[in-house]
Image 1: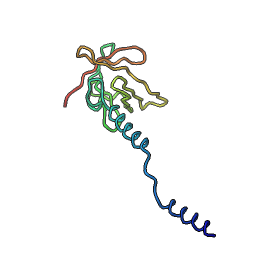
Image 2: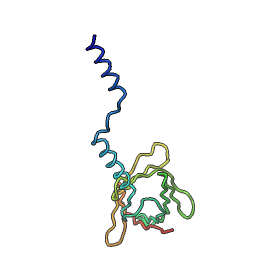
Image 3: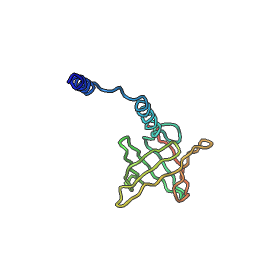
Length: 134
């Protein structure tokens, strides 16, 4: 009976105490936070959020408003031509999904070379990007 009582008391005590968080869990949380912050860095080393002038491979100019809430709005001559969601997976990979029905995520390869920011779409077409400072 004494053994049973001692076992029950030990079980009750262990049920009340909270285990310390594992060091791996804390490290993972810190790494995820660092990764999330890095995901919002564009090819030019600044925030992905902002207004951008994009000149497509065929010379068309699109103004792209990339918003902090994860959405974007593209306009041509002041008229909205596309809306959707964006995701900066790394400074060299900007991905977007149009709000159109059945749209799939597309990613562009981005880089800055000799002061020129370019973005290559999945078709291999290259556009130039200029950040519009507010």
